Length: 141
Image (cartoon, rainbow, N blue to C red; front, top):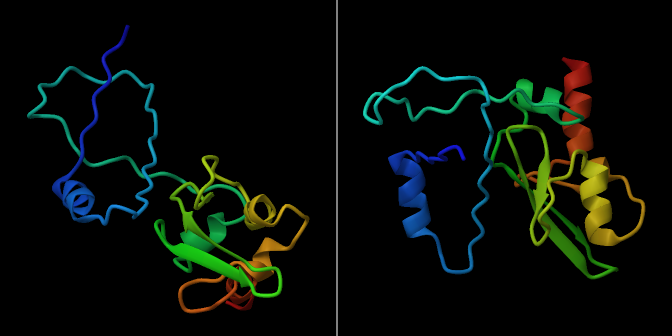
């Protein structure tokens, strides 16, 4: 059986120790199956490899309109629903309370609402901008 090791940089560990008891911290693991040259633990790099975003949010990430770790939210006052989702480097959304990352804004919204809905117009950045407005910015540039 192979040995699995995890290396975390100091800033990550500091964030874990400073987190509130009810705070959710999302961790994304990428598996690198390419053979690596032998190195002692002191020689190994702790820097992760860059992840290329894919899917509907990829261009927003590549153009810097979204960043990995950004938290999106929505509110449907009449239905009494609200949710938050975290953007991953891969271009997925991790919805609070759901274990599966979603590949599109609409799939993430459906997971919360239980019915078909346009996630592009529902999810908003912390500045209140919809994903649809960000997508329109790309088309104007």
